[in-house]
Amino acid sequence: MGVGLAVVIFLTALMQGVFCQIWGVTLPKSIMGLSDSCVTVPCRFQIPNNEEANILNCSDGGIWRKGSLTGPVVFNARTPHSNTIQIGGPL
Image (cartoon, rainbow, N blue to C red; front, side):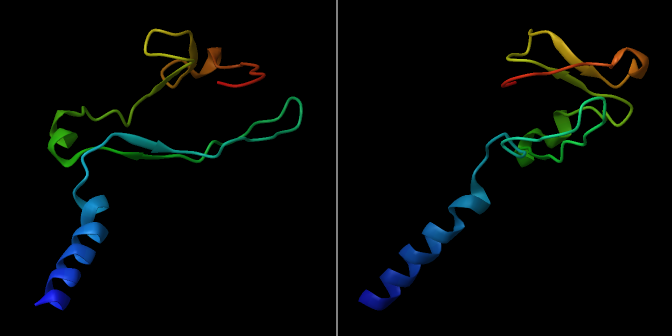
């Protein structure tokens, strides 16, 4: 019986990540590029399953703000002509 309990505890510990309901983003800690060149920021978003239906289809655009939800706009996909930006330091 002790082995069975140990297996259950072990499997429960392994499954914590499967059932967690958190928002998240994965991206590199830093990106370097040459002056006057373009860079691509690889990223991945985690959305809780129960919130996925509440997310509108935003495939036609996205906004990147610095610091907070009300911070200055760094990038807006709907106005690509105005996205010539220079960023230095932490975002």
